[in-house]
Amino acid sequence: MSERCMTCDCLKVNKEETQEQQRKSETGGHDFQLSIQQHDKLLQSLPNGLIIISKKGKVVHINVQMENMFGYRKEELYEKDIEVLMPERFRARHRRHVTDYVVNPHIRPMGSGLELFGLKKDGTEFPIDISLSYLTTDDDIFLMAVVRDITEQKNIEHKIALNYQIQKTISSVLKISLEPISLEEQLSHVLDLILTISGFAMHARGSIYLVAHDQDQKTLELNPNLAGIRAFLAWSYAMKHMYAKALAEYEKIADQDKSVSPEKN
Image (cartoon, rainbow, N blue to C red; front, top):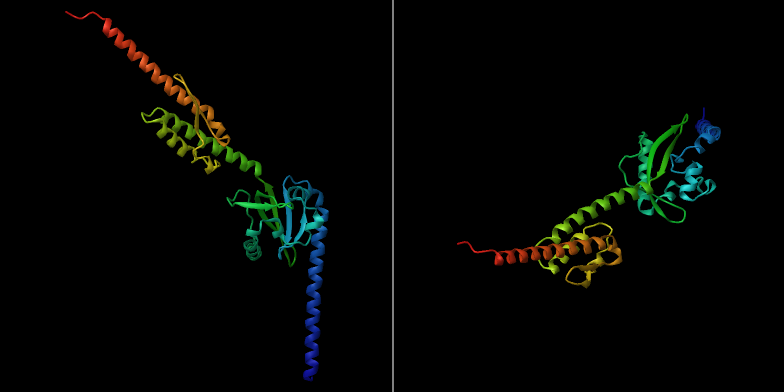
């Protein structure tokens, strides 16, 4: 057999192998899409968002919850890179994660402790939690993610943490209000404490000021950002002043009692 014939035979074999691989790929993709269509009602009924991507990171299917969550229609995301649904700063790293996951697929449940964020069509970022799984065909793999919007959960956690900080600060403010130091020193300490509360702007420093002062009560006002503590500060300083006044009255009465009491022989 001539060298030319051997070359032609090799080319023919390679062409047949390529066609066979392409046929398997197309058949596998067709079988997968057919399976998705057969189970679409079940996927659409899930309470959370569901997205399925190819091993190249292309979107092949999402359910209606995913559409509502991110603001896209299914047709807008089909064959798009999955990274379009995440903030720019995470995209390059996520592409590497997809590659690594394809090599070593595994199940990752929700609540894994990762700080994850989604990006809506309108550019809004929001916190999400994701569980990962995978589907396999004869010669292909698809990545499946269940996505949950945890904005409300994060807001509740923030409120609980903030309320704890405020209560802790209020307790410390009460102690400061009873210390035998000047009003200026007390205010300085109180402001330092308030500024340790996360979410309170730094420009609030120095915004506590005296608006009324009589012999019975000191009334303090705060920047509107700190309005939640305004009433307490006014009360605590009023209580301190009333306590001092009551003590003075008691000492005065005690002195009077001493002055009128008969001297012992």
